[in-house]
Length: 246
Image 1: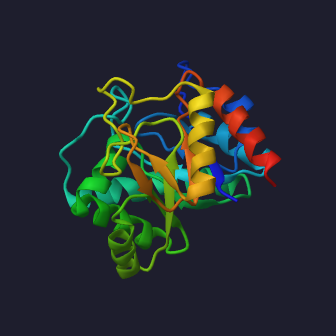
Image 2 (image 1 turned 45 degrees about the vertical axis):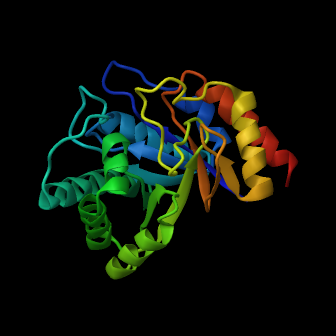
């Protein structure tokens, strides 16, 4: 059965983001911010505890060092810079996990870093190298696309495995990439739209682009953004839908 994942722990200091307490019991995998695009040590600890209490798999969610831009701005970074700040963030979350007698099981880059690795093989290689250097048992979560085989070949060189992800609440371009947030309709806010996508995916192993082109894409998991204003209602609807099919 396809797993539900959500970006979590994205509050920072007195600034609150998302509805983690309500969403965490409904998901299977949590992508926990590591302090660069959002979060702080107390938030990370609270989120790890919440994931553990709900038996939710924990993943590191590293981003560019960009708190002001929430990690959604492209930064010009070298291979070494990306590799090292990804290792740094995985290590920070891993330390919090160890203190709570649990562990990080996968890595999912955030925002501009995630999008960057899907269009630039040097960024992908830097992230794969970071994951491999830190712990080859960690899986790297990436956007499922027509290039899955190519990314799998790169991951094999680093001795790591991939998780292929689709997005429940984002519109897709015809080439399988995510529609830029600057375009109208890029973010889906209707539970009905999301459930139609989920049903089509389960029945056909595919989703539709914004022009209704059918995209055959592998899906290990499907994501809802924690900062989506309708995240809780969407995740509730998805969990109920999937539970009814068990």
